[in-house]
Structure formats: C-alpha cells, structure tokens
Length: 504
Ligand code: BGC
Image 1 (tube, rainbow, N blue to C red):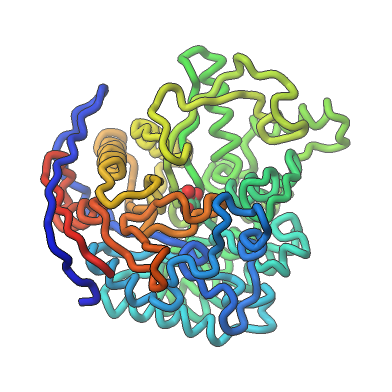
Image 2 (cartoon, rainbow, N blue to C red):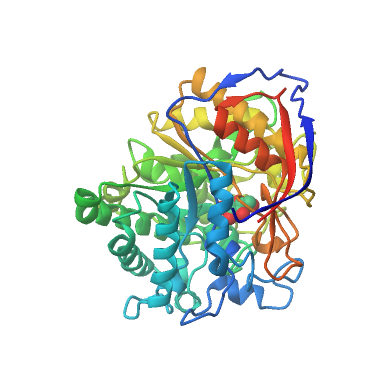
C-alpha cells in the first residue's frame, strides 16, 4: 500500500435534517456507476516538460495579476510525476471510474497534428494502463479548457477553423487510446469556455468581448463537438464500441417568485445558460433556443448591428449537430433565482449576454458558500435533472461533476452534508421523477488548481499539501463518506463516518 496509517480514528455522524426535508436511508439504483474527476491543467503540473508548449492557462497564470492568489499550475498536484499515487487513492475509494482530461498541448504541442508528442502519448498510455490494471474505468475528457496558446493566437474558439483543428486532435486520441477508452467526453462546459473566457474575463483567454465572443465560441464549440461525434460514430465506434457525449454545466435557473414574469425570467435564463448549448444537440428541432434567438436579435437591432450578434447555423449544420451525444453529460453545483424586477439597461455592459437576458439574479437567503457557485440548494439538483428529462426526451444522464468548494480543513462536515443532500435529491429525481441517471461523479478527487481562484479554493475529497514538494494527499472525512457509499450503496445520513489520518 502506498499510504501510511498515522495514529487515530475519529467518528462523526452528519445529521442531514434541514428545514424542508428529513433525509431517509435509501439505496442507490443498481445501474448507477460512481466515480471521481479531475482535469489535466488542474492536477498535472509539468507545464513545460518534454516538448509541451504553453496552453492559455500557462499564459494566464504566468501573467501578473492573472490568478487571484498569484499561484500557477506549474506543479499543481504533480500528477504527471505521481499518477500512480492518484490511482492508489482512487482504488482506496473503490469507485468504478476516473474521469480525467487530456492536455491538448501535451499531445500536439502547437495544437496541430503535424507533430505528435511521444512523451505526451506515453504519459496517457501509462495512466490508462495503470487504471485498467487496477480495475478502474478511464473516462476521458478530450478538452477541459487548456487550449494550446498557439491556437489562441489564431483566434481560438472564435475562429471557425477550430472545428477542424479540434477534430484532428480528437482523432489522434481515438486512434491511440480508443482501444482502451470506452467513454469520451468531447468538451467540458461550453458556457464556461465561451462566456467566461470570451464574453467575460473570469477565465482564460479573458477576452471580455461581451455580447459577441460568447456567441461565436458557442457556435464553434457545438460544431467542433458534432464533428468529433460524427468521426467517432463512423470510423471508430464500429470496432471500438464506446460512447461519446458532451458535458454541459446544468446549474438550475428559476424564477425569484411564482409570478408569471419571474417564471418567464427563470425559464429564459435556463435557455441562455443551458439551452444555448444543449438545445442544438438534444432537442427535437435543433438550433439555438427561440428565446435566445429572439432576444439577441431584438437587442442587436436596437443597438445598430446589421445582423443579430448571435451567429446562425445553416439548415445542414442544424441537422449535423442534432442528436450528437450518446448521453447528457451533466455538471451541477447550485441554483440561481431570476427576476426582471429591478433590471435596468446599463447595469451590465452593452452589448452583453446579461443585457440580452435582461434579468437580475440572487441566491435568495441560502447560506453563502466559500465559492458562490457552490451555494447549497439541493432541490435545484432535482429540478435541473427533471428539466433535462422533460426538455430532451429522457436521455441517459451522466452526472459528470458535483462537488463543494471550501477554504480547507480535513474534517469537512460541510462537504459531507452538501454531498449527502445532493445525492438525496438525485435519488428523488430517479425514483420519483423517473430521470435516467447512469453515472455520478464527485468533483474532485483532490484539491487542485481551481482556475482563476488558484490554489485557495479546495474541492478535493482528498486534501493536497501544496507546501510539501511531493504534494502529499490526505483523505478528508468526505473521502471516507464516499468510500462507504461506494461500498454499501446505501445513503445513510445517520451512519457514523469513520475518519483516519492517512497519507498518500
Ligand atoms: C469545472 C471544473 C471546476 C469546477 C469547480 C467546473 O465548472 O469543470 O474544472 O474546477 O467547476 O469550480
């Protein structure tokens, strides 16, 4: 065993009663697989080893003021060096699968496939082989935000050519790893890539081209995704026999009150925030949602644009994109409440996505979390799952991310409470609403580089000791909680959760 047992064992019971609901002991559905997740830039480190060239996150984290706490992902969790230790931790949990991502510039340093890195291939071959040797299924995200900087210099997701560049990269992965990888996620969270990276400045490449960049990126991400799906479907699925889909951030948006105006604001917020990316793929009609097309067209006209700032798809493109996901990859953290009461033009930049939606939101009086998008509102998880079922004809839903960010601490009662209540809401969605949830993934295996928040926000069920040059990891109480859930498949809020001081 790679870990050592240090002294004592502690017990705790996490009582999960709250104002609205007492959680009962309940059983997980038989078919639901359980796993943990990470992403390349957030854990690997080794930012410049071998022939790897910088990604947009290397550039941003090396820019003064780019990351809140001044940290970088140069080392992160050192998973590139110590991936075998990650696998021991996953084995300790006993989960079915590990969802990780591949770094595009580690495989194709400049982004183009004229030069494929042997070191990059070797690293992921070793990681996949070691997972399989330990009976853990690899679930691979092809793109989780670390675009080769060279491609960004050519426009990145704002350049329509990116669909071809992306599919060339995806093809290398199918050819090399597809004999062993049977679940592919094309792209992680189009909204975060386009809105936060191109329309705003929260994430790399921080273009802040509001009202334009996010819509351009949305179109090209959807086309790139669909091209990769078709390629896999035609050339690889027949012999590799895997599945491939996209992952969409599906935090719930709803009305602030039950007034018809607020209900409409909530449902249009859902169209802008989720439907913009999901509707073209999962709906019967395809294309962007009607409310988004109408609102952006109207505002663009008022603003003197000759055409809508929302790009259009051709009829062929609509058909090409429709139906291109074998499952609905569902990431969920929290819920926001929307109203148009109090919205005034000029509150947000003009033009912008928020101004196009023309609504304001809050988290009501729910207890604020260390990171606002983790505000604990479990009933929103159930509603979001039901929304997917109702709007998209009950697809298989792979929950690819759900987790809770804190400022640290090993006995993370708050995270255990959050995860327990969210799992309870998932079971309501499955048992009462009939949602077809096939997979559940905790974000994240261990603390890692939390994008613009750097190392300061901790999502791990294992703590990462960044002060130590080996980046030692220690299971938190939530790791023991999850391990027990995996072993028993019983959600029992009254069970004592064991906690031991262990090190990996
Ligand atoms: C992303 C992760 C991120 C997590 C927590 C998700 O949007 O896919 O990379 O760490 O949220 O903020």
